[in-house]
Amino acid sequence: MIQDALRKPGQCRALSSGWGIPCLLIVMLALSGCDDPVERTQLNRISSPTGDLEAVLVRSNAGATTGFVFSVHIVRNHGSPSEPNDAVIGFDRTDDVDVEWIDDVHLRIRLTGGRILHRREYWPRPGSPDLPRVEVSILHDVQDDEGSTPPEARNSD
Image 1 (cartoon, rainbow, N blue to C red):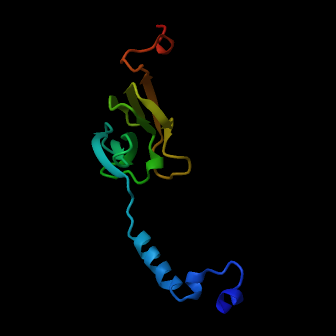
Image 2 (image 1 turned 90 degrees about the vertical axis):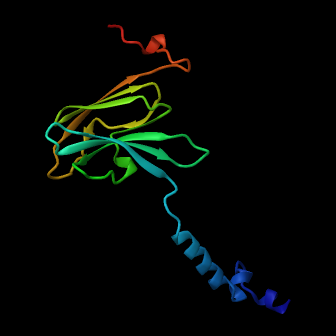
């Protein structure tokens, strides 16, 4: 009782009892061994005409309670996608995608259905030295739940 009265306001009882530091160390060790819970699988690699660059289609899976998320990355030949945020497109709710190089500086991505989560029109990001600038065109054919293109999304051509 007297020790409780002498404890400073806000002071943790576990820390004052001598168990705080070992508990803190156990928690830190447990968290330091945690890996990235997202599993990323490279599904396809498409080489540019000269072979200097590749477009890499990646499927990401964060576990049983989430759906797949797909992304397309541009990398140097035999490189690997480094950051999920470096993708030129991220999408979900479909795996119907076609990726093709028009030439060494133009990449076309055709997506049927699904939802685009993010997109970039150019690669690499500004300020990346010694990399050619690639223009990315994205063609998105929006579909409703039955698989048909809604009238408001159809081209008028």
